[in-house]
Length: 278
Image (tube, rainbow, N blue to C red; front, side, top):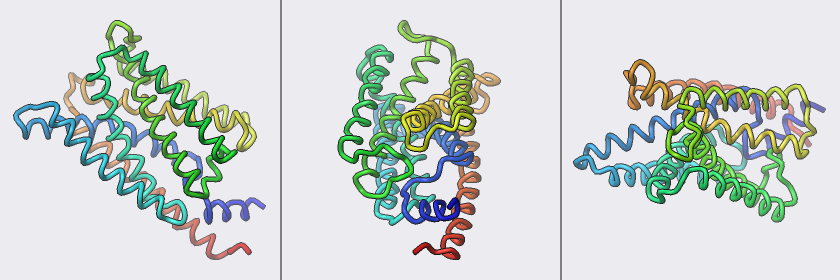
């Protein structure tokens, strides 16, 4: 039964199974998105006389364009494809970071208000998703409609996570002001607690707690990765690494994990071909 279920998931689901490699890749992608976004802004604005607006706009254009390409390829694929899926996730991390930072600066409102708005949007995503499909399962993303709602929810989760991290780490009037490292530790502890519950508590698959804890953990990966990225970029040893160097570190780490994911995917594909289901 376990083998049959595993093969069925390989054949039909459009998103990866949730396991250790999934969470490692997700955490690294968020840190990479933060540092690459900042590095891109700095490099591009330097090419245009220090114009911050042009730097942000060009970063939005290239990251958003590539995200669209990878997402289009994943949606056109018949099943989950690790390069397309994780390419889209990584580029969304860059695109989402620069969008969130630009909107925060442009609107000039306390971040806590934006956290509240995106939390409501997240709830609205779930409401519309369930109303359209009668199913919020992440294990049954098997048609275009469910996949579309999945990616919309992922995009909103990135915005929520980004704003949550800024609210906890920044030192403005309405922010908590914990600092990058402390915010990363606090959110990391909550994240680990959620994963321990998922592992030890055995929530019913597709039940409320299984779905809720997945998305809580998913949202938390964004501010955790960003907090540690910002700390090592700007605070550790007086910012000796910087966002360019940290971008290279994260890219190497992400590429290494992606290789492991692809190898695992190929092995599972061979199993599915060796034991076809009727």
